[in-house]
Length: 367
Image 1 (cartoon, helix red, strand yellow):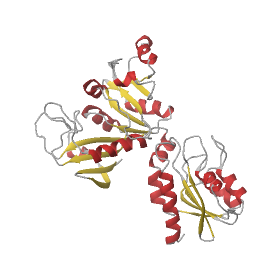
Image 2 (image 1 turned 135 degrees about the horizontal axis):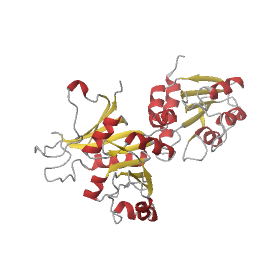
Image 3 (image 1 turned 180 degrees about the vertical axis):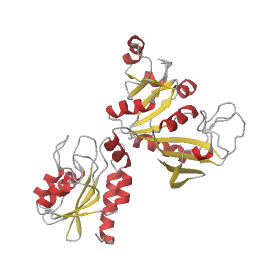
Image 4 (image 1 turned 180 degrees about the horizontal axis):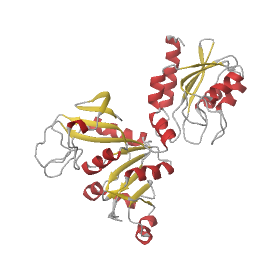
């Protein structure tokens, strides 16, 4: 259907509203809604927090005038099923709204066109596909999670222009500048979890929190095959404050007790090639409502993640520096591929300047 500039302007406003829910609504999608009547905005809203009202209901409640006969612009197809809140289609029908303009069709099998059908059956005009690409991109995590029931994984690393993540002495603070590091903490808020390997924790004793005021901390996931995590580490001692998952191949319940006593959740996973089976771990994390993971691993974990096929996106921060050193660490180690044709292929989506640093975001290309 042909669109006009005004439709796109209203949908852009709905997208801006939806983004305000980033980090707070998972594993639900981010959704924004704007209600227009006689060329004026009379109500707007967004999904603010998981378990609370959806965007459409918030927008209707915000109306300064009766929404009867109005048009609502919503970034995602309204739900038509009972979840933690009643169906949004019911609220739209009851309000007297005459037209619904939708960005993305919901891939959730409980909705997926059924919301549109219910609206149409009740005499409401429906238009779809307005800024669909932007609306789909907004909820790439939700779309992946609802289809696969496993987390969307973003592999992130910072390196110098010669591809080093540390000096020959192992020092890495700091490769990038403040703007790039702030962006990382924004993503720690945005995504549900952060995952690292035990080597990173033993070497750095990190806190792995979000250091931006009024933002949420990610759930911390430690891949610890042989359960070597120190019980006096910052991660274990703060596990009652920040959700913490230890993924291990050690099944002895007695060895779990010291961690559980301090608030950690221990998940037992089988081994693959001597390390945790990451595919099995993703299934178990999906069952824990972990819909997205920021992977801040070292070279070994990054290689294992790529090799297992769990990585969906790669974030490469590049600093205008050169460390050198044949033995200096690189972002991805492991055994590596044997032929150039066997490389993991990436499709670059965006390139962002963060003061002196560069962020390249790429999608992993699947066969």
